[in-house]
Length: 307
Image 1 (cartoon, rainbow, N blue to C red):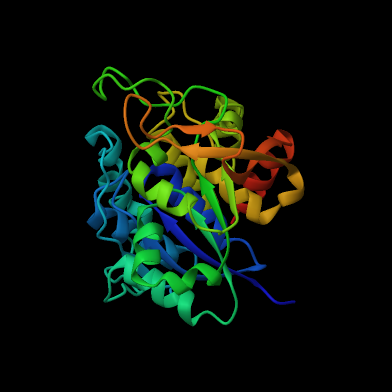
Image 2: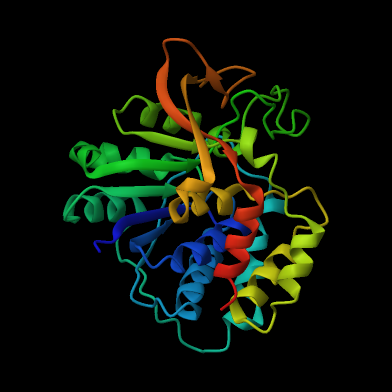
């Protein structure tokens, strides 16, 4: 069976590392590489932690590339500092050597080259902002035809966003963070003909990281991957935390668990609603994950991480 080609672009948040782990367990997927976008992280520890995770998963052949793009609206430092903590987890530092290769070119150049050289169109799994994708398209517009689909954790269609209007200087509550970090880039991608499938807050709000799930994960801590996942969730379970990126990634493993709906939309790039993914009749057609079999999703990731 031919494997599905996937190039991952994540932005170094806690759930980005867990999504990387989940993707590496999928036997039907052929990862082409991982790009780290410097959004919900500090880039050096995020790249380091990603490479160490690949080593732990036995996937040291997969290259990692460091994007050098910048967004308009930086993530709060309190979010980004988790990248330092995870990079220093003992389970990721049992070896003095990191074997997964670091690409010599920037993440955006790496993305453009890997897609250009791919033997067939590949899926882009993006669990951070779309900035690296937008810049790669500017580097080589021809790669648009080499992207089979973008599967993106981003947007809030018919629910409030997750931007704090007090911290973010009077913004309204309509934007989701991955869009808000760089709405200009999101709009750039929206103006392509690439098929786009999003996992919006409309769905992720219904799939929390529950105490019961964490307890089940704890009962699997004899497995290194479950142990690592449990340590990651221990950093964030003091707050409302949801399966944003992990849910998005799980779609590649079991799309039949999901219901998908088509919407016409636009990206708001200016004003108090900057970063909003607005439902607009006549707008850009996208698909959005609308419902998921939650029980099967929880069962799936527990099973995948029991290794």
